[in-house]
Length: 128
Image (cartoon, rainbow, N blue to C red):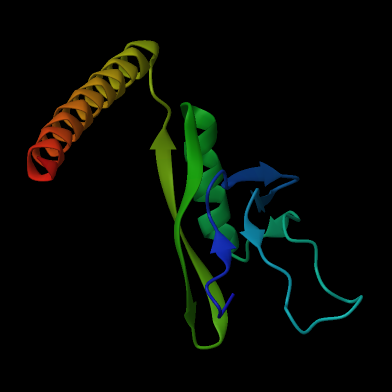
């Protein structure tokens, strides 16, 4: 982890038997380790006070919220994870995001074609 070889992509936390567990977090194996190395994507238990666990579980259960890790850092020798309660996108949000992404791709494609056309013309006039 100290090498920065951690990926929070696709990671999420969920309640499991009254505890909070972190799924999908990828921590690369220790480079100098041997057969005792850990599995990179294993499930990890989050160490929190019981009051914090109960409060978070209550919020997750009440209304379609998901626990998502935002960042990971060290403090006093402990690995800490900053969690956020997030609500998933609705169908119309997804459609809007996809439409924006497609429009941006098309703009980038046209700009690329335009710039390539300009540079090809300049190169052709210089050769003459």
